[in-house]
Length: 145
Image 1 (cartoon, rainbow, N blue to C red):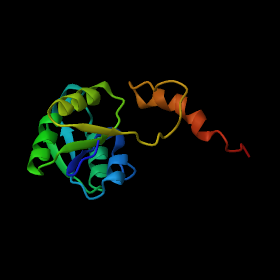
Image 2 (image 1 turned 90 degrees about the horizontal axis):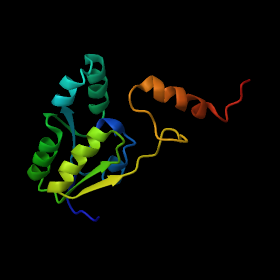
Image 3 (image 1 turned 180 degrees about the vertical axis):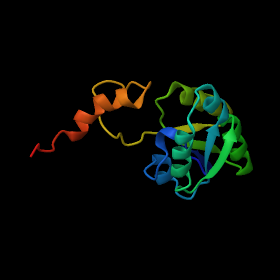
Image 4 (image 1 turned 30 degrees about the horizontal axis):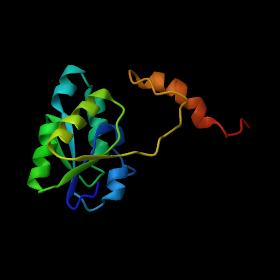
């Protein structure tokens, strides 16, 4: 897709300076939305919300809270955007949000550089499960002494 005036939707799976959308479109307006429904239903801890906030404030973006697709689309309208650029997501909840955005305005997804290449898709339930699989791969190539 070739947008002239996109906005960037930054979500929690790529909340950092290496986000491919931020790198590809450094001058585009960007938004991160705290998903109030998800926070309540999944009982997201204040510690995790604080972690997300601390990462978000380091980036050139606008913070919003509420329904993610509604907020992203409203942000796009305010900026007269012709599309939305974001990073590819793994979480089915974020995929559904992306589909809702794409139904209203073209959505381009960019693949982030993976932290680690796993032999199978990651288990999304808990970080500790993911880390049990990822840690040995992360340390491959480093000598044991």
